Length: 195
Image 1 (tube, one colour):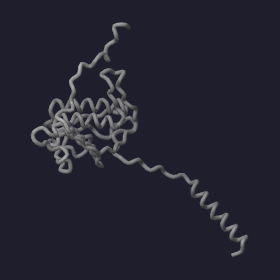
Image 2: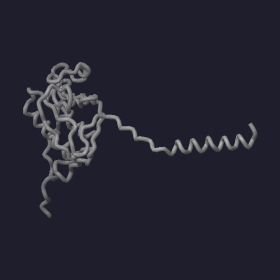
Image 3: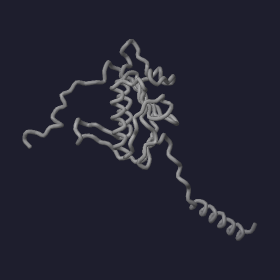
Image 4: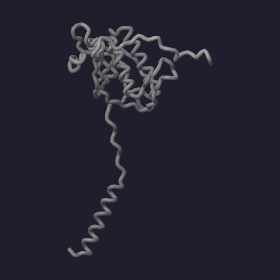
């Protein structure tokens, strides 16, 4: 092949590569489970028919905060946990893969343990006990950017996420007897006397 033919051939190859590179490429769908899109909830919050009043209260709070984040109304319903945002204890929604993470040892170790798992059709928010369930729900919200810095609306951060897609997988158990602290709240929720 002559030098001029190689130059023309090289120019054609370069032009073809440039044209291919400029073609629009469909954006890959981000990984994760869709919880809300376009102002509509994709999944309900699911509790056991045997859920305690405490777990039902956490479910209502979770649904309300998810609505603040996404603008979508999340239904809270009793179900078997096969799909949805599944909130409850490991006893209510048995999951062999999480049994070790959520076992209670020596009667106290693990009472506050929780696990969060994202699966194709459900988000598991499970605890060893009701308190662990609460930890799972609020830790999940924390992974999505929610913060409660002090007990007043001015110190609450709820991000706006109209299209909420999640992929959280974690488990935790405190290495101490209790996660709770006793507090007096200070004066963060009251105007100062000098105002």
